[in-house]
Length: 433
Image: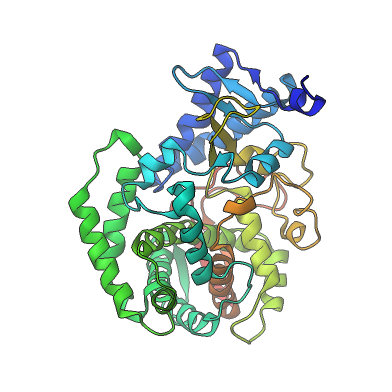
């Protein structure tokens, strides 16, 4: 006999028209923007046409029409489901890696271009040891990493190279961001190794095409040798030194993923700075909460970063693949979670505004669909290190300057925030502190 819970979670089947609209208004814009490496031109178009707004509205209508049940899409030759309720998001992410594996056919095809042995696409047998290694190095659950002091010093030094007057644009910020990332992960000896991250960028651009683009094995091996050289140096005060102490045969693949993730963290940091520049009250509160001590936990700035990622998720589509038959379908079913829909749910009173306090007062914790770093056993193991790096960079910038928005879409506390934010063309003015 089928239980009441199973009936509630059993998928409904989308019509052909509904499936096409999900493809056109949700999947295609997400893919066009670049899932593994953002495409600036496509992001500019997406921002102007407000692609994510259309996707959120469509899924809101589908949720109402199908009573919040999972929606089986009509994809030839595939079993594909779309999550439409926060309860299902919680169940899917809590059920990782079995029966909802993060290693999907799409991820294996994409990430295999530059990290074929990464923990995210590892099978169950290899995943446990690789995840254990990753957590031992990145220390999730600790607001301050054991190397927080040298990390904070590196971040402050790189922030000091940014303009002290005039304006700040993405390209200038991104150069400083990558310098601090290379120092934190690999040590100061890698600070100026732009070749390493340029190689990774080329591989990630290929990865946007997943199985539609041939793998550049020679470039991948060149990147791996270069990365291994920095790791073998095991410079004190860097993650490379911790890696050497912990040990793991596939460390270069795991580190390649961390570098990939730090790119998204840079986007989130710059978007947070743009939000603070356009929200004077929040900027003033952040400045008063900074203090002079480093390293510091910077709870309010961390909440600001979290809300920037809620507003503009750096992972717009979370995928899971069933390892066995479930109420979602047969083994091998792909399940989609479109995070902008859940983060900008029209039913949320704060959906369209900058609301850092929801990460401090318990409201975010009560909503299982707010997943800026995913959730469950596969939650991003670098989340605390990312939040530390981002908030420390922001603290250094705000300690010496005030900011105001100079260009880009209007980010105002008096109107709904844009559903898509193109960080590549945002410019901020620096004012005296």
